[in-house]
Image (cartoon, rainbow, N blue to C red):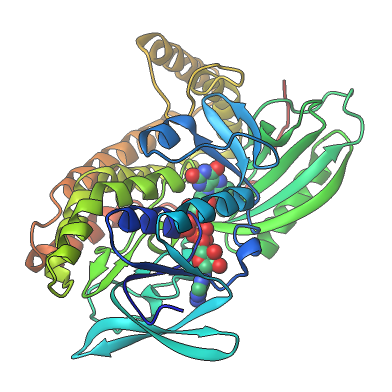
Length: 447
Ligand SMILES: Cc1cc2nc3c(=O)[nH]c(=O)nc-3n(C[C@H](O)[C@H](O)[C@H](O)COP(=O)(O)OP(=O)(O)OC[C@H]3O[C@@H](n4cnc5c(N)ncnc54)[C@H](O)[C@@H]3O)c2cc1C
């Protein structure tokens, strides 16, 4: 194992591999560790959707064959993450990235109160790795960030029942594929039960039946059971289940500190409405690679001040968009169940038509679509399916989202301005104040 390197990255999943690759290609020595065995990384979440544009734009070689490639759907590659990792590890190794698997981050090492590396454990032996930059890419474990000393400059919060969604994925096989069953993306506002067509196979015999729920896996599981009891779903066989979660919170107010950087799920740099984090985090890494490169090449210690530009670049750009998406996510809790049903059945097909050929990762609204949406909303108001009170609430939330975005665009140029900026951020996010809601009944119809 390397005892000294420029960058030590904890986590060999999507965040760790992409950042390590960028840095190795710039000539820096990079060690990536993961607590899992090499073949096991990514097993917790098998199927992933990534837009083709991201692969092209960021020069990541896309999946080309089975078993990694499952299919192509509306401008999106549907692939198997564990196979993607195995393919990428080989490419990265040939570009100089070093990996240690079954190797766990234990604690940070300090000199004069500044990070100089980390202690890691492999096969019951502890090793010291000296590094100029330690990166937390450990996902929702937040292994490194949560071990920072208080007042080191990055918050040390971890994920609990309040700041993430719990996801249970059921990989199913339809027992009577000739009977009516979902054949495209379907979502019910029943704490987001959804059917994902990305795994259906040639004969449309498979699907992922997922649920995104609040508070805990137990609660989410109970909601799923209730949904299945109250809905008529074609008979299926359960092949396997996956349990995972994704962040529903703003990132820490700074992503960097002395000798430290965090990104990916460990830092909530994702889009919580789309449940999508990989392109967002890859963009963050790509947009800031030159800052890290220049800091490393300067030969100086990578101080918080030296790396501050990473925050400025991210939070004034894509980070500002993501902060407003976080604020908008409270829409989901504003509407009553019958209104959400109405919105999903009438509005979603306009925003995201199930069989559209076009790219579906961003909702693009043409004038025609906007008119159609307005027409449906007016229809909903007229027939009592939507309440004017809640439409006003949504307009209010959009205003707060706009306010938060503007505030992020004014992210402080230097660390000294951060305290005041955080105070104002808290004032704006306090306006969000919407309680998560659990729906009791729902209706399920599908094309
Ligand atoms: C159900 C679901 C579906 C999703 N679908 C999509 C999608 O289709 N497209 C998309 O873009 N995003 C999707 N996301 C979000 C996406 O999966 C995450 O944003 C992304 O995987 C985060 O990657 P990461 O590398 O930051 O963390 P992770 O993928 O969680 O990886 C962290 C790694 O760190 C390792 N680790 C943890 N602790 C330690 C330690 N102490 N020492 C050493 N190693 C450690 C872990 O073993 C793991 O390999 C989805 C999320 C969920 C829950």
